[in-house]
Length: 415
Image 1 (cartoon, helix red, strand yellow):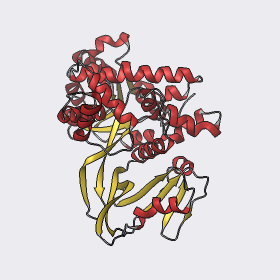
Image 2 (cartoon, one colour):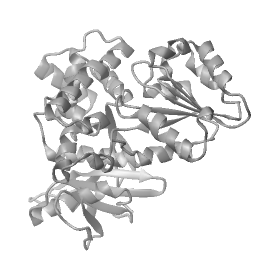
Image 3 (cartoon, rainbow, N blue to C red):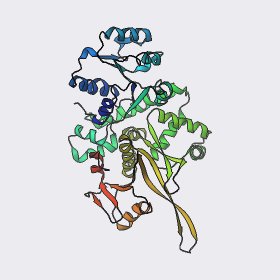
């Protein structure tokens, strides 16, 4: 089955001929090679580009071992470029080439060369794109399937939402028929691939604390935390002497490996960022669930994580909102309270405030969810996303209520 990745494909297409190296990154097994070598090549063919002008090199293929030598790779590509027409150079797993930066830079000044590469594993993580390709590379981040992309893989639409929350959106998992197969694959992928990548990259020999940290994050998605708080948890519960500096490094490693994303707090009224504490969300829910043995299936937190991932996929910068609210207690004594807005999303001049609310069973619960939104006095749009079977409506406070399925299935649902 061909799973369409239209949003990602559009990003690649928009980047054609821009004079930069297109670097396709992202978590392993999310479909980077498929996007570049299948979907993008099909686009080029549909545009009339002949295969002789699409130079495809899979460096993971043992048959291409010799091309992992930078000079051999240069010579091979040069031998394929025999006229002045545009050539599309597609290289999979570029990190397998020593001095790959020099190879790629050699083609930046050639007018009829358009470069696309993928990179992953312990030698090519997120930070490398910034350090190695300053001003010369454009990163295109491949994520697991969105729910909208995931739906065509499912025969039972009624259970698709729960299936997605439980096993996530890695394409290979989505196409598996058996539950045990999904579970075993995800568990093995986490321990034997992702953790191995991080340990190799940073020379971590004793990974007990790293493993424990991942378990803590997986058990508390949507919760505010910071390295100092985690250090105290490790000391009291795990009797570990790990320092907050080491924890901070580990958190950075997990982000660079695309396993988790950090969302920092934004003081909406004070209009300033509060770097700590922050929230950490998993890039793929299936991997998160596999890490803790599929034991904590808390739909409230999983749905919040899902909404965060969808917002990021749409190109929004997503923060956690905080409102400092002055009020009085029952004795008339003034006090300051912090109210949370799940997500403050920015994209250029646009901003959206979003609350994730699994259920709204009572008027009291509804008022609790919108209390913070009502205190925001600007004119940006406010949303409550819920699993309740409702049709989209606008309340008297100017807040839009919508069902989670509408939000996920309609990429323009915030418009």
